[in-house]
Image (cartoon, helix red, strand yellow):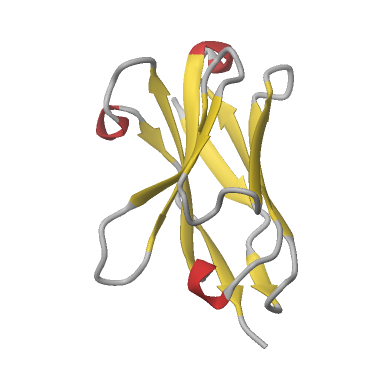
Length: 119
């Protein structure tokens, strides 16, 4: 049984930081492309950051320079370090695991973790 379990969300003031974690089980983690997505109410889910099995990363323009994605294959965990948070970063963040070249919809999803950026 595949599970992706996110943690680390919460309430933070603008300009603050959070680190999200996503622990995977039931998959050969090291070969999967891992991604963080977010979905605001009434909007489509969007890619925030992705990291390949080889460590190559990509980011949404809106988070470049502020967010950093990383992975620890030994711990089967992917992280999203979020700095300089803005109110517009408020939403639910989802972890995704998918095999290379496949659409994320064909992969696995976590249950989501809420991030609220507010003073």
